[in-house]
Length: 222
Length: 186
Image (cartoon, rainbow over all chains, first blue to last red; front, side, top):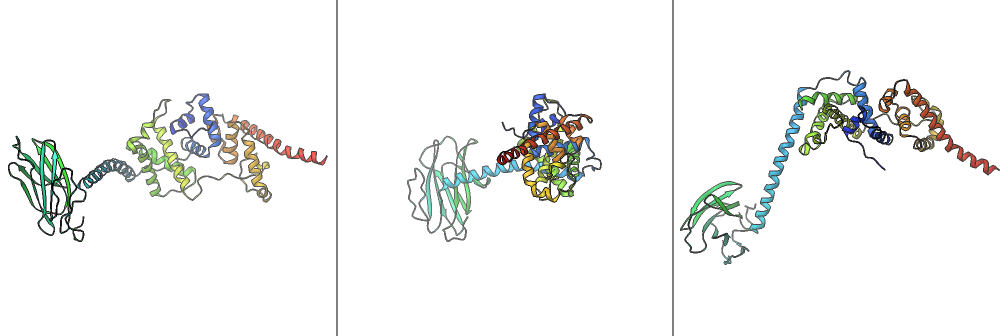
């Protein structure tokens, strides 16, 4: 029955005579067939019982520091890797939700569930629902590279508490307004990826991700 | 890490010296980092393998890890890792192979190598270890004694007995073709 190479601890136990006769015989059988393990055994014996270390020099300080940096880099890479993975996932989700929202001379209708409007002008109108919150979002190109975003309630209903509407870009807050009786307007918003976040009493009700971009022949392609 | 840094660095130097291979300062630095990265990567997966259940110390275990890492590194290099197995004639098997094979040995080298290998397989693991390590890989007898847990005086007799058994095994394989010929002649 083939026996894979023993781990370092087993090999150490073999060399320092801590195995049972049966375990020892197994290792000897393996060594008879495995050149790599014989090399390792011989090298260890040379280190411990030979003169291989007779002229060894102490480890330079820089070498230890390099190893410490390398190990520290493992932790950073792990954290950064997770962050990057999460960012990619959020961006992918955002893209799937947006479904290529385009503003410009060639405005296209946005396929959003519940949308009652068909866009034929360089204006996008859509409806978003988060729980009991019914919103109307209007995005209108105001300049070659800018747009205007208007957010209001979808139905005439008195709300107990106002809603804070936060416009974010890359997790950074661009502007924030309180939605009450009249719609809030974000003006002169440059093209790019954004998120509209809706908060009531400190609790986030929902988020709408979108991209502001020019027409296909525009210079401001993402 | 600081506690075992010197141990790892010394092990790297020692293994390279035992293999008569020169490592540059950069190589030693890289190998040193490699050992610690191996221990700590994937949430210290390797480090968590250490149990010490039989009394093995962490230092011994780390030294073995360092030895394995250096040997793996040297194995991947183009220059020879270890002294290659020598192809020797049966007549020279009694002593460690220190001389170059004769021209005649070259001619029959492949056949003898095959014959020896097949015959070795019939021996016990301990006999095989003795022959492979000392006769074929030219390792000192003291190392073989360490591996087989033999005393300095006993190792010589064990060696000679192993060689005798190998010769007997080889002879029995050689005799068979001879017997066939004599039958054919009859």
